[in-house]
Amino acid sequence: MRRVSKVTAAAVGVTLALTATAACGSKPKDDKKDNGASSAPGGTAQKVDFKACMVTDTGGVDDRSFNASSWAGLQKAKAELGVDVKYITSQTENDYVPNLNSLVNDKCNLIVAVGGLMADATKAAAATHKDQKFAIVDSPSVEPNVQGLEFNTAEAAFLGGYLAAGYSKTGKVATFGALPIPPVTVFMDGFVEGVKYFNTAKGKNVQVIGWDEAKGDGSLAGKFNSPADGERITNDFIAQGADVIMPVAGQTGLGAASVAQKSNGKASIVWVDQDGYESASQYKEVFLSTVTKDIKGQVFNAVKAASANQFSTKATIGTLANNGVGLSPFHDFESKVPAELKTELDKVKADIVSGTIKIQSKNQPK
Image (tube, rainbow, N blue to C red; front, side, top):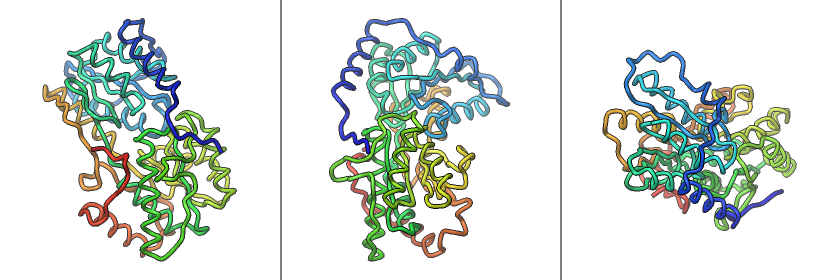
């Protein structure tokens, strides 16, 4: 099992190099294929003079996760607000700064950066282009021109962990992530806490494989765009007895869904971000539920405000209380999840919202 516990010094060096690239104003690298395919179809709103643009993280716009959700928010803005939209794909982290600069040069009114890995690149671009408006998914606001769109997914993942523990037949569940960054590990923290709460409440001893919240260490694929790594990790989990698995890894997580599909019912998946039953429908029969965050809605709201000259750098934080995060329907598992477990989940959610249950994760957005 490949384990990563810290962002490496090499990654820090890349970040510094990206910032230096922004300062030097090197030539932007466009993804021509994406630029040519990025107009949202079916828009009915009257066209307005506003362009909202997006830079994906390395998982790509079809990751069935946070990139896809962000693009859906821009498509909604095109259809309902009449704005122009486009995106550029980042193949590697080296593309972040050139892609952001490319969209600045393209006269985009609002540029949405997708994912916490783009924080340094977005901060550098915003410092260089002080009159440009930015928004960033899964990262805090940066004055004076970057709005953070954040989500307390530990709350919803707590429900996912409780569900997984209550549904498990083997008494072992698992989770893995792409990289050791807060937008990823906050899910895993919440999942672990939900399992622990279930054990305390029910007098059980369901084990979690893949993540130690106290140590901040566990199973990490190292990338968001490698289904093969997701398959490798998930096969290892199943071999250890885990029958409910939550990947927090974008496109890499599709490898987990593929393995579950081939497992003859030995494993089911708790997906993240977008409802996996709808966004990754080729694997829909394995999705027990999804720990959702309303990226689509937050991105749409950011575009709507900016297009109405109401851009703000006040961060938004999705929670269970404001429906910014949640647990999706059970779909094909609706009849398989016991009624008692459903009732308990409703009570746990209410207790999290009221503050009776306090999430401990250090990775929660402030």
